[in-house]
Length: 376
Image 1 (cartoon, one colour):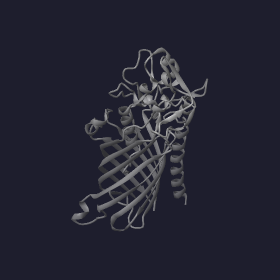
Image 2 (cartoon, one colour):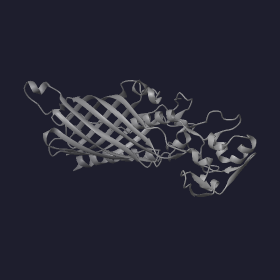
Image 3 (cartoon, helix red, strand yellow):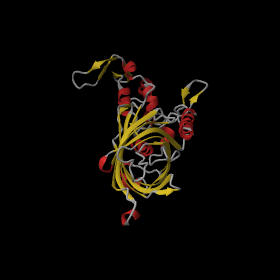
Image 4 (spheres, one colour):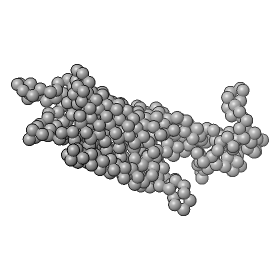
């Protein structure tokens, strides 16, 4: 019992460390797609789409012949793709296991912590620092408002999760994961399937062969009303267990993983501080073309026009389908029921290699993962 109490203390300490890291700051890295916008072309000097949405009457008065509807903010799809590519990499299925399964009837319960590097100061082809512009930043203590831009985004995203693995017949294993992305307000969930093609041989010629497995997993995030993000991973591992003093097993492994990131936005208001319904005096959709009908109007040099330009700032970003390759190397240590593990993952090619059409341009990313749990 004393030995098992030590196991429980080790796992509890690991969980406490995760919780402390989570509470260090509150949602400075919350994703804010509404800040990823570009100015429209042919914009009059001294104007911005945000100013026009805020005070359309002044724009009309100062620029005769121009109407606010033609100068809405544009979604920055390049910054969006870069942000989703790196966030999708961070939440990707970790494939954090050797080739050998838990075995028929086996079960493992663990806590996993992953630290994913992001290009926090990178600038895309539009000149946008997408992590600076696309995250909330800290709250100003003087007015309790979020910053206009996040001057100091984190360089590491921290993902903490609880994972359960269950061995099945014929070399199969399934796993379920539930966790959170610290400092973002996001949570994640998903599952994995793992098939050991060759495992468990101890004697004879086959005893010299490594264990070999293939598998796949999926992770998706919740808590984000403005976007949907899911990452699918397909992986293969080779591992070899080594028994230490007849009581512990050390298992190094290497692997490769194919990642496909699916990012879609909902309707995003690029001018969230402007209430389009109130500004318009919304009366309902037009029976002719469905456009908003407004009771409020703008005075021009030729008469009046409806004040409905702010609705044009409600946009959706382009769908992003990002493909990446990642290499994996790790080691697991098992002593009786105690299970400890570490893994390092690294991009095998520049993210832009397969995603240049989306404007993805960030440097390679890496992920360090740690795990502690019990194995039955």
